[in-house]
Length: 564
Image (cartoon, rainbow, N blue to C red; front, side, top):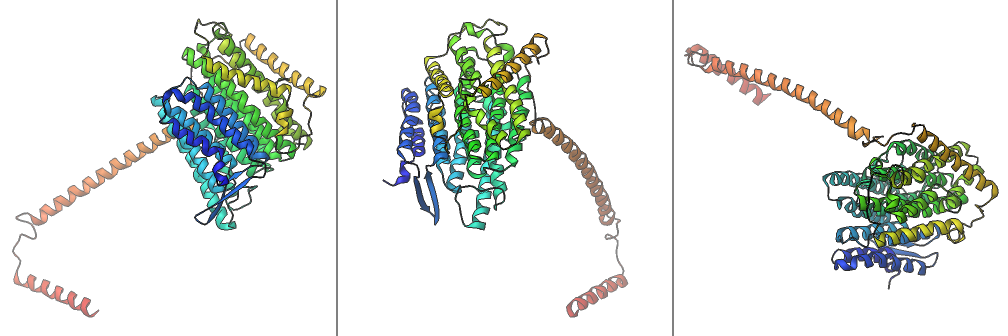
């Protein structure tokens, strides 16, 4: 069998096609078994595996196993299996098929060693994932899905354009370190930046993720943005502009997450925040920083999925995810509350939880390389994430004021998925050695030093004290059922306003031109009547002399044009 056929991505995508037609009773088992099978195939491929394929005289490589691709492919398989378990109860073939094809395409993109294969999988992730939004079945979900699809396809077109320019200039399609100076580099960088939700390119994330189905949001949180982080690490490691971009990504979502009422949108903003840490690590570009970015992506996928799972369980049972309409759910859903708190402590980087042993690698790398401004911004962002994801999400959904919701606990499969994910978050935090062992570079880092533990606890306690003080004094932003806009104000408010103004100007000009044309038509008609009416110029009898003159004029014109 050709080596490229051993690609686990193809196995999972083929399983997605099978899910579209198989009996509904098989869907849950298929969604769990296929990622497990793919992970087994992945780890049977040794480091250094490279599977070239010649297609239309182009040398492509659909499988490349090295330290960077293997850790991303590993966590994609694990998260895909956990998401499948979480969605076990779902009997919608479209959702299961879309989730599996989406996961397979993301894994295929991670394993791709050339820009053409990357582009194909890049676009497949966009096409497959949008069905997880449309499966919500509402008119709003359809509109959001269309916006999401347009943006994702634009990202793919930019990637294709950059790849073509790069190939024509260099004759190479290899997906290795590119940099911004290579032909097509900026286009490829922008394509990655859209999918990574760079500042001002990020609103598709907050727009789309909260509108997906209960289980679809969990799947969306795993693949798209982390695939872009991988692509940046592969192609643009060490580009210092990423330090500035990443620092901005960590800081600005804090302010929007604090005032947001939809708790899944809060988590979408905190996803931006955590992506920023990874982008800063990639921009620093040292082995420790890249290890930190990879490790943090691994941990982030788990704890962010856990948080989205817990909020999905709340939405599934209560029917709302608005902070203003929740509270007191710990009485009805105590296990979900515990799992949510574990996810919150992980994202906040409490000692003995996964975020503590991964995020600190990036902060240490920034300090070692003397990027002190970025280091301070990351420190501020670490405190901010405790406020909006570490405290706000569990506090307003499970505690705070009891609004009287009395509902059953989440279904068994949701609890099982959350329980396994929570166990992994704790296991990585307590014993990070297995994770460190599969990082791209050798690890020489000890997270549990006295100075680091004390510094982190001081930071977290200060942030918790700030939240408590603001909340008790009534200064914390109230939970208002409203839609908060940031840069999406441009296309939600400014663009419609400008279009209305332009349409008004066009209508006025159109009316004026119409009136002008109408007046000209009336004057022409009056002139025609004066000429052709019974007593008009052409109706009058002409004398012989006049006719002789016209004949002479026409003859002269003929001779002039003929002999001229």
